[in-house]
Image 1 (tube, rainbow, N blue to C red):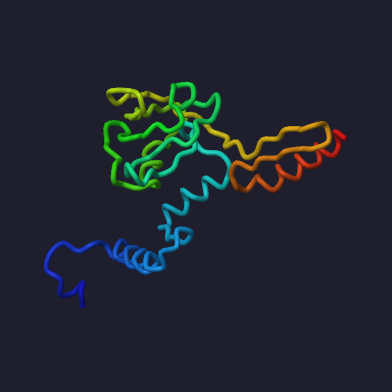
Image 2: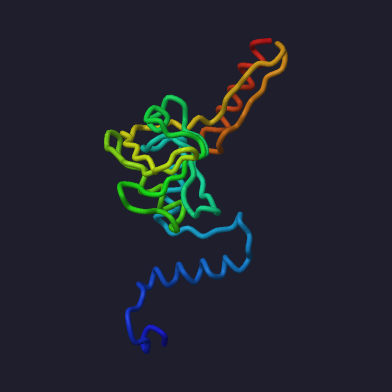
Length: 181
């Protein structure tokens, strides 16, 4: 009846359905429960594959500033090489403001085909004005884990991210550590 009798612009049926589902899930107030559209789910699955095309940085959404924050630029990857630093706040991507949007849509703007260029407008503590940093995207292999031998007979394995390669990489790291004994 709403669609039949509503006067004015109506959202697409899929957008209305997705909004209703998000509304119900939001009522649970559980930060570990969320809804993804098919496009968002495809995007999420690409993260689980352990590689993507982009700038090479771990990011999050800063609630206080309502924008994207750089958690960690991956060493020797495009963001790192261009001078992006931990705790940089990204306020625009290619001159399009992202403040007040959301993590998924901001990351989708930053990612892109290998060899293409993206410009981030960054606010950095200690800098008077925002910085414009141009980055050439590349194929990024997400560093899944790091290992270190401590004291000769103790191995430290740090799992940085869960992806489809993580189990195999942890098993191999354990095998390598045991073989080194």
